Image 1 (cartoon, one colour):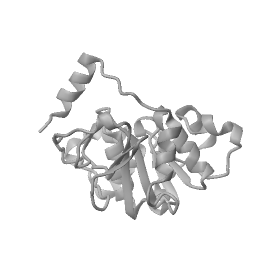
Image 2 (cartoon, helix red, strand yellow; image 1 turned 180 degrees about the vertical axis):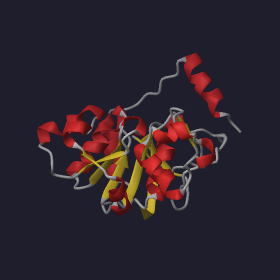
Image 3 (cartoon, one colour; image 1 turned 90 degrees about the vertical axis):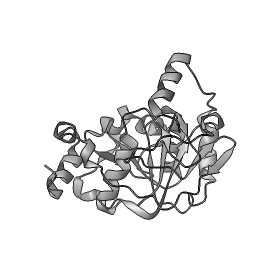
Length: 227
């Protein structure tokens, strides 16, 4: 079983770079995903690799949910057809969120019903456990939205990258990890056969200081009596 930190150290030591294709190719594969056409609401990470995915989501009539930087302010929503085409590329970036995005109130997250989640990765194993940037914001985002009732019952999550990022061996699984259902690359989709996307905030690893830094997490902690 592979240790996540050892893989991160190897990437840094060997200066490994993955041959990412143009974002448009990845975005088109996502459009072919089962369930994409019917999906009403998508969560897409702010990675540059997924710029076109976010633009497509709005052009395809989907509600786009993005996390605020560091999750400090929670999440932003951009509604389809609410932004001029010439502004779309900027609107779906962190810098554009403040101008074009709608900051979600704590009470509004319960009605989101997010159907699909997409995130960038460093590596992913055949069981959907992935190695991210080490900050855990995707796992925490899914867990927080799940606890607040913002995730659809049949929601699925996908890693986006290249085939070289798919491991043969298993990654060590932390108790707070949220496995993805598949890997989307320019060549197609590798499904991992994971079941229903479900997650909960794992409070034992969160300090009061870290909880206070994330507004909706602080509200949830107070509501559940964790603080």
